Image 1: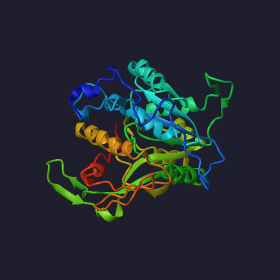
Image 2: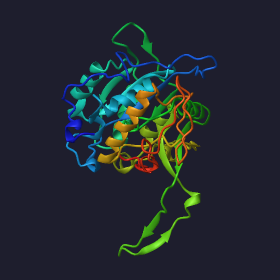
Image 3: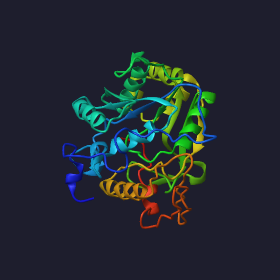
Length: 324
């Protein structure tokens, strides 16, 4: 990544080789998993990106001619059984998001204005999915989804097979979410700044994205939750449990559920996308990058191995928090 100009969303951009023209759909393969109920996605993208130290929110920072949020959107657009995507952005970024959708020909997407907090923004996205609207191009109406997948706009490397697991578990249980092992010990401190106690790390997990819910569960959870939850809460699974009595199925996620959190992560994401472009690869149900030291061959047109220089494991252990 060459300087902060990479984060200028107004600079000229080109679709590049990663996607030429329209967003790709899932390649149809014999035995491909299918879902026979409507699934939609909410991508909260209203964060300010303060931790990157950049003026431009990280979801709109560009590398290789495309903003980060566009890479995340195309990961969902290429999944054939996802019917629609709602991106929730700050009101002042609505025009910018509309321009990105048009420039990169995102067809399944519409943008809605967010709220003052993460939960308020997600709720706006859920409400938008409940509206019956006709698509701008054509007369096909988008049904209200049976399952809603919520995912961070700054987690671009989400795999189709994992989305399938989340969607199916959400339909069966009412709610489902990704988890990852904790990479550091969690401690509690006293008000004076001394160690109070530590948690046994093996008993706890980091809550990740994506998370899935039946539409009824997530909409009712937000409708019933308190103003305090809307203002200060960040965990959607907790809302489903507390206000709907729905205990989520937790599914161990792959290392690729990594989140762009700090400025250095944008450079990491650029390097990763370059490597994937070389091999015509994007995370899918038929490919998997194995991290943590050894790298398995990717099942693409040419068998290849990714070096540890391209995928340092520290990149994938960063950003485990959910905040925007």
